[in-house]
Amino acid sequence: MPLAGIALAPLLVSHHAPPSPRASVAAAAEAARRRRALRRVRCSATAASGGAGGEAGELSRATLLWRAAKLPIYSVALVPLTVGTAAAYNQAGVFFATRYFGLLAAAVLVITWLNLSNDVYDSDTGADKDKKESVVNIVGSRTVTRNAANISLLLGLAGLFWAFAEAGDVRFIVLVISAILCGYVYQCPPFRLSYRGLGEPLCFAAFGPLATSAFYFSNSSRSISSGAVLLPLSTTVIASSIIVGLTTTLILFCSHFHQIDGDRAVGKMSPLVKIGTKTGATIVMLGVGTLYTLLVTFGISKYLPSSCIVLAALTLPLGKWVVDYVNKNHDDNTKIFMAKYYCVRLHALFGMALASGLVLARKGILV
Image 1 (cartoon, one colour):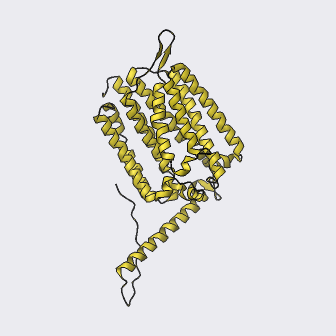
Image 2 (spheres, rainbow, N blue to C red):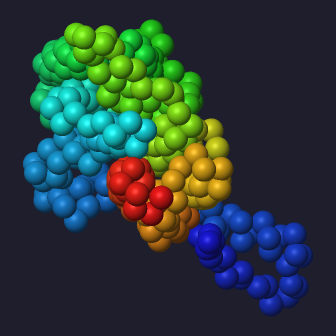
């Protein structure tokens, strides 16, 4: 897949004596560094003025509200729930519609807490000082934002414990609370593990093995006559949860590209602060490649039905698009902002393909 090329500046040749090869290479490298620095300054100026979406040097109110709402990011609530529910249907032929939509509302509330509290604590450290779409900056009150976050979490927990009462499976509530705790130590004091570069492992665990498996177990059932009917842990749900965790982690990883300078300024050592954007683009390529390699491996091993492999393989052009886009724009702060949203599309479509494949396999279609 093509890597972004680096244009070399023309060398000024003396009429008296040609430069040495070593001097030419040094001059070319210095010219390239200056051009990249200038491009970053222009990108930062464009972003500060709102780019095409702003007027009079500011982003429009509608654009700020859209970015603050982060609606596409709520796919990270939908996908683990849907894949986990589909895995339960594939395993036992069960589907509880009321429980599914109740859990969806609860998951959305928990993600709302995650987003709002992240803005609160990034405001405390100064990481979001110049982030106009920060909810704290838009509302103008840390207290109001924090209270809204806490109310969302309490309502979400109420929905989760209601589902636990319906399912009667303690594995569900233990795993889902563990996933929430991952979100807490990710961003909240005194832990703030995301500032130590541990956000991606926590994200993988929370949304993959923990949340997806938890939602699978939420489809157990409690009966007055026969007691709890618990779903068995299967290789299918384990394989599915690994894939969901990987696609979710790609979203988080790509969200760091345009925030490197701000993160570095407040000591937030995200992976891209440590390795830089060029190496980060290579990591994205490896991550997407790993995603499809795992898909094929799980299919060959019969951990996932062939219907999952066929449908998820249809997202390959989107996966290639993500890789090409990041490789081309990794050092352009204005354009790379969109990379996380392209990863959201990949995450959502791959997850829906996986869930659809599990349902079709149960029905005997493309087994």
